[in-house]
Amino acid sequence: MVGQGVLRECLLDPAIDAVLTVGRSATGVKHAKLRELVCRDLTTYSEIEAELGGFDACFFCLGVSSFGLSEAEYERLTFGLTMAAAETLARLDPGLTFVYVSGAGTDSSEKGPVMWARVKGRTENALLRLPFKAAYMFRPAGILPMHGERSKTTAYRVAYLLAKPLFPLLRRAFPRYIVTSEELGRAMIRVARSGAAKRILESSDIGACAR
Image 1 (tube, helix red, strand yellow):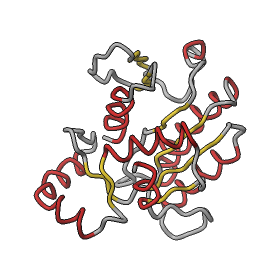
Image 2 (cartoon, one colour):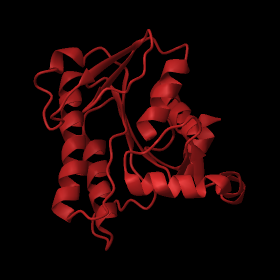
Image 3 (cartoon, rainbow, N blue to C red):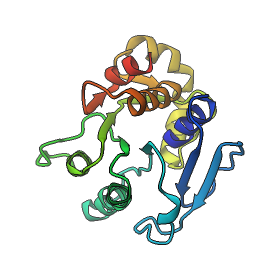
Image 4 (cartoon, rainbow, N blue to C red):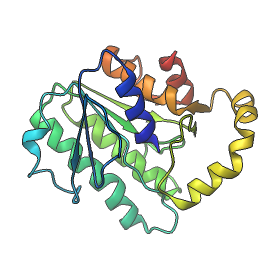
C-alpha cells in the first residue's frame, strides 16, 4: 500500500525524470518514465545489478505484518530482505539516498519486549551504518490511503475498509499521528532532494516535510 502511494507521487513529480520499481510482481501501472523489474527472489540482486545504477534515491517500501510470524521468520522478511537490497545499493552507488519505511514504536535499543519493534530497530540501525550519502528512517503511525491504494495483507484491507468512514474524524483528532499516502510520498521525495534535520522521522516530521 505504501509503495503504491509513493510510486504515484514520484510519477506526478515533474522534477523526477525516471522511476524504477523492483518487486516480486509488476505494479500494473503504465507511465512514460516508469520501468519495472520483476525479481522473484529478493534475497539477492546479482542478476539485476546492472539495472540498478544511476539513481539518486531508493524508497524502500517493502514490509510484512508480524502477525502469526515467529521472530526468526519476521526477521528474515524484514531485516534480511531490506539489508539484501541496501547492502547491494551501498556497494554499487554510495552517493545514493536511502529512505526506509519503518513504523511508529520502533525500538532503536533492539532490546524491548515487542518483537516487531526490536527487529525494525535492528534494521534501522544497520541501515544507518551503511555508507550512503544519507539514510532516513520514516516512522508513520497511521497512513490514510488517498487514491485507492490497497494493502496486500488481508487483515489490513479489512481494517482500512471498516475504518474508512472514520478517516476524516481520525485525521482531525490525531493530526500529529496520521499522514496521508500523498504526504508520505511527497515527504520521501523532499528528503531525497533536500535532506532533513533528523535521520529518524516520526509522523509529525513526515507531515512537516510534506508541507
